[in-house]
Structures are given as structure tokens and as C-alpha cells.
Amino acid sequence: MSNIDIRPARRGDFGAVTSLLSGAGLPVEDLSGECMADFLVASSEGSLAGVIGLEPFAQAGLLRSLVVAPDSRAEGVGRRLVAALEAHARRRGLTELWLLTIDADRYFAGLGYRAKERHEAPPAIRETAEFALLCPGTATLMHKNL
View 1: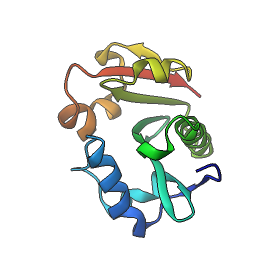
View 2: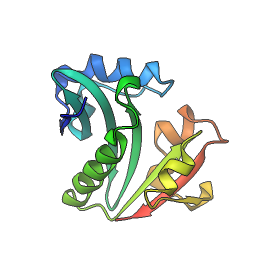
View 3: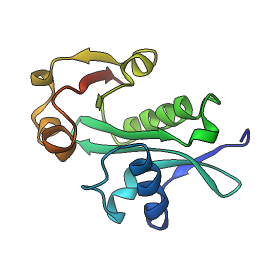
């Protein structure tokens, strides 16, 4: 899939997005069609190649749910999705992004994110379902200033 298009997710993408996320073991329990406004999808010829989401709060946002379809990996789709989400966050006036990861800390470190202690996250981030309920306490918290 060399011709990848990154666009805002639409309400109609909800089923495909949650299927890709749950297939990768990522949480979907707190998602709804309404939250698709802050998700981006990568597609090629009508096929979903990847997805990434944002939960915005005042100046901070939670980067969540980055996943690339198995047949689109190693093509830079993940990097393009992260860059597009960071630009989207900046347009929304956010100045920092936070994320939780179980096994992608090295990947995100390569994109400029740094590990932080869980208590360092802003209250709005700590109160998200992903932080408080859905991700294990052993997940690595990471941060990047935009």
C-alpha cells in the first residue's frame, strides 16, 4: 500500500476503526461514534491501513489508539499518523501530548516522546478511562511538548 491517504475519521468509520483497534488488543470500551471527530485514519484504495486517536483537554491531549494494519507495517504509516495527529492537536490549541503504551515505548521515544512518572500527568489525563481503568498500571506514560 504505497498510496496512503490520511484523513479525519467519519462516523461511518466507527466499526472498521474499533475492529482494527480491538484486533490489536487496544481498548475500545470507552469509544463511540461521536469521538471519531478526533480520530484520523490512513486508507489506501478503500482499505483501512491505520488509525490514531486524540482525547483533547484544554492544553493537553491524550494520544490514544495508534495501530497500523499488519499488511501496512514498515511503510511509515504509523509515523505519518502520529505527525498528522500532532498537527491536528496543534490546530486545536494543544501544547502537549501524553500517551500510555505497553510495548511501543521505544517507537514513541524515536518520535520525541519521553517517559514520565504516572503522577506527572495532568489531572485531566489521569481521569480518562484509558489512564484510570483500561490500561494496566504497568503501562509506560510518555509525554511530548508540541
